[in-house]
Image (tube, rainbow, N blue to C red; front, side, top):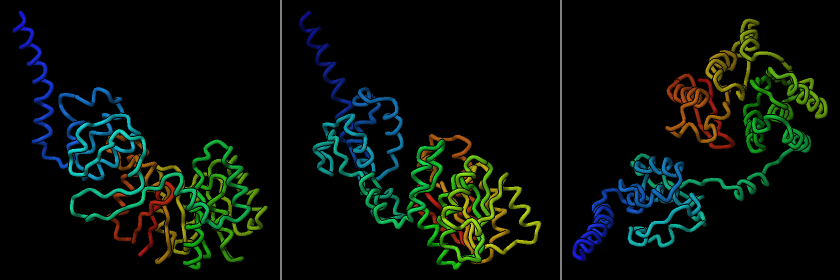
Length: 331
């Protein structure tokens, strides 16, 4: 009986060690910590929550540094005893300190070399905002909007500053905004337009539009803003029908995402050659890069991003500011 019991213990020990050792020594992926966590035996994974397991499944295509940086941000929800032996000599895998949150490398597919990028955390973003020249009237509008329904729809101060600068660089006089909300971005643009400038501001929600109009008055720019209440597509089509094609310098889209493709096509007719069309929310809280997200809004943004990438009618630059903006210049 004792021999049987001893054999049973030995079998248990080998059953525990063999898959782990095999995985550790033979794993082809560069980061053995990752391979251990993804072991088919579920050792390590059994202590993790379901969302964390889902998150780890996308790591197989990442470079070791990227994979570790991503795992590191899980705030020490799990640990790996093998990190001290992998090529990075990482001896504190379970630490809650997010050392690699800011700097990481791209996928090691040779396409982007080893270029490093900055991931903006709250502390760094606070520093960015401290370097934004926000007019007092815009600050007042931003603070009022913060307490309103849908306040996350408002562009950030650094985005508004970029939009205003683009308008100034262009020397724009005629602009269009599709999706005004409470008017933060349109006010930023109107403030830098010349006295003879005109901004067509399209918004379907009258409650939000009334707030915007009040601030246009307070800022003394209401004479520059042509407010259009109703469906933006109808307004844009009416402008084209009135013979205003190719007469606008600048356009900004920040409205219903599933309508963006139609807005883009209509604005291409209205904006002159050399003019700009800027589209907001092209990164959509990072959902566009997550293959596990397939809701209609996210899919529509992905389609538009792909369409614009392949569209030789415009030059483009996707900028990771705010929720992501794509700047398109009509050729």
